[in-house]
Image 1 (cartoon, chains in turn cyan, brown):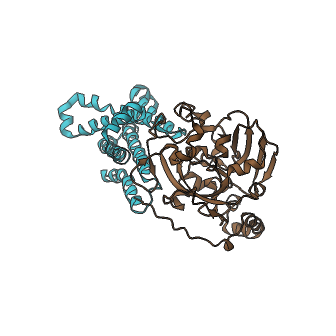
Image 2: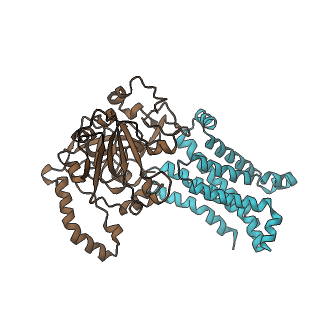
Length: 191
Length: 318
């Protein structure tokens, strides 16, 4: 399977949103709809990116490891759309309002932290950066787990009452983090 | 992006409109034949056959108590709902509320009143002239709509039950039946949904018991067959599908207040100056508009209702 398939799969949610936008399909509240869907896909693809390592272990194929950058960058792409929608349509570019939100509302603070962290990881995702940062690159990019945890906390804190989706993501990210933290235990399970 | 389509109100001559009671009894006759035959022919179960299609109502437009802002489309009003009894997504109620049976329906009235008992909906509605009132509707989640409700003042109904001097509050309850309201099988809220008003709020001429919108009976997802509309309060105060009204002497428990007392007060008057702990209430997104607009104190009904709260600190009595 070629990388193009992964690219197409990652782009599909965006194309769907674009199609819905052209066909009045973004619900009666298009801004909230776009915010929710782009947020969903940022966190979905973060989880997918984190799942590639265990998948590589399970299958013994390096193909999965090579897809991490593309999937991770797509997660950042959706996070950008998510943040931009909030900045343009909720804040109307009012940075004072952004500062107030960051101080007053903890779910915005953790969400924004996750976004900045993802931006740093995206900026250092090039081959050149990998070479230049050497050992530090790996240390830095382990922070993708922190992004995922912050994203789940962001989701958990923002919902009004129904926590079942944030809980599902919490279990997913928790399991993936568990896999990473306990490699020896995990290896035993697989073998 | 979708933009508002201005609704074109086509006045229906009164002679062409079936009075509510006549309509209901006609439906009853028809339901025995056509409904079941059609349901069977299409292979629908009882679940689908149960839903009542919205039907035209006889009403008079109350321009004095209506806002001049253009109403949201019927589509917006009936597909974007918070009605957790049918699921927590805004599109769930429209998709799932067809399992609610609104016929027959009865409302029990009790507590501090001379006349109490359980009354069929027809008796509740009897003698009340229906009015159309176009009200602003502001959700606590910072979105809003403009809705042409059809209903009658709650105060007119309450007077019929002759509240005693001990009646200081009115408590309302929504139907509890997880078979009809599948969202109730998940304990997201402490079912059944309950709400309440202070007596003077309940008797205020703006407080409406709605049976319809856009000139037709309420679709299930909008709280059929009988719901409260309190336009100066956040939407969750306007309890849907009411089965019990009680006149009580003490402030009754209300569902969202019990669920998260720090986030939702008993009064829950629309107030741009008191933020929800997790978001600002200063502005709102009117559905159909791209940019947010300023939220008005008491949702723009300040001149009518501010007197009810004279001397009360609105930050304390949220």
